[in-house]
Amino acid sequence: MSLTLVNHTRFIQSRKLPKQVKLVEVGPRDGLQNQPIAVSVKDKVAFIDCLSNCGFKAIETGSLVSPQRMPQMAGSDSVYQQIDQHEDTEYIMLVANQKGLESAMACQLKNIAVFCAATDAFSLNNIHCSVNESMDIIQSICQQAKANNIAIRGYISCVLGCPYQGEVDLNRISQLAAKLYEYGCYEISLGDTIGVGTPGMVIELLTAVSQTIPIDNIAVHFHDTYGQALANVLAALQFGIQTVDCSVSGLGGCPYAPGASGNVASEDVVYMLNGLGIKTGIDLDKLLSTSWFIDDILDRQPSAKVSLAIASKQKM
Ligand code: MG
Image (cartoon, rainbow, N blue to C red; front, side, top):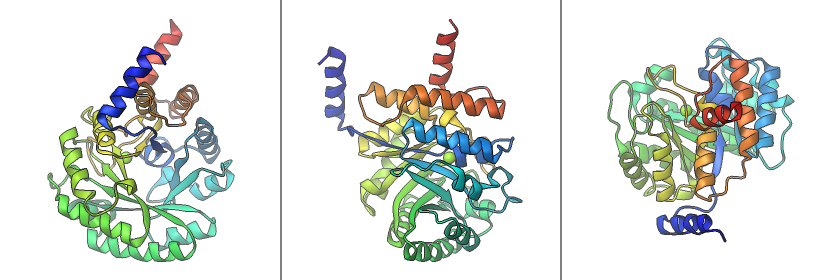
């Protein structure tokens, strides 16, 4: 064993870090949904196939919403039918209502995601109903999904801050997580939608939520608006979280959360976890190629630090 590896192992043991982490790639949905350019079905299929080949075992593939409401997500059902589905990979589609669920069943989806917000203010602005009203819709979606053997992932947004009312109530978030778990969600992803959280807040949040649902069923979803996302990921891992959402090239944002920048970049997370000796199963070289591929299509400058660093090294 090399000296470096000994140090990694000691760091992991002393900080109780997990040996393995599951990364949920959200770029094709959460990422592309917030880009000014709508990507064609053909390019989305190529993008998702690349991500499957990188080694992701869970990929948010699209959203079954009205194309009038979300033009970037148009054709998500065709995308799902055309991608090369790896047997051991979850291809997750966001479903917001009964119509979306019916499309999911028509496409024979195996995985869907449902979402609610931590505050009424955000919920009313985002989906035009209160949190309790959205939970009633979610309950009905979950009942039908379970009856059709569709696995359900749950999201709670704005868990560390709301763009409309500022502070959020941790008890309320814990209760929402407990309800989603009770409705049958196998994983509840806690989203810092506007990226205002810092590591101490992450620990407070996880302490509260892990009192109502098992820690193994909690995932974290950070945005990098204030440059805190990687630090927040590390704090969550030290708390015992083993599932982290990330988006290739840091694609993302939130149209209802002014100023929110992208999700934590997948390549930055993979680089950090590689450095810590934590297994992800992701091939970093393939991930970087995928990142450059999608940035090219979007005519966008790479923003992930690892992507920028390695691209400039290659030019030297
Ligand atoms: Mg996000």
